[in-house]
Image 1 (tube, rainbow, N blue to C red):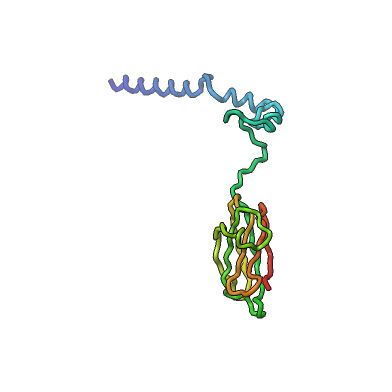
Image 2: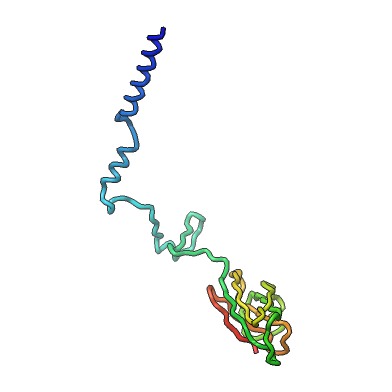
Length: 172
């Protein structure tokens, strides 16, 4: 019985060794063929849309195509760099600044045009009378209104929103 168990174990070891060395159906053959091909013959998964489809209107969702460099942006990055003095020449240190967004392009300060403003940020100038602030403005807003509290005149600034911009202004 002891010899029978030893023979069974030996047979199993030899079988496993032979199975490991077999020339069966493996992926190694496919990998070897791909590796031996020149780089120019290997297919890649690059997609170039049909220019005719890009300029036509899609009737179904399967006909939707985008340009290769399409970027889905829902906001614009804006950097504020503000400083200045009030009408009396005093520093704007610790004065409050409010940043509003407007859906329409507005070029002149007009109460009627500013009725639907949305508050984006409230902050303060530092002790040196300077302010640096990075904002992400939702893409549906077209104009920023920057307002400084505590100034008698010229306490607001209207600026169009660009995709990426820096707004530098010195209040007087």
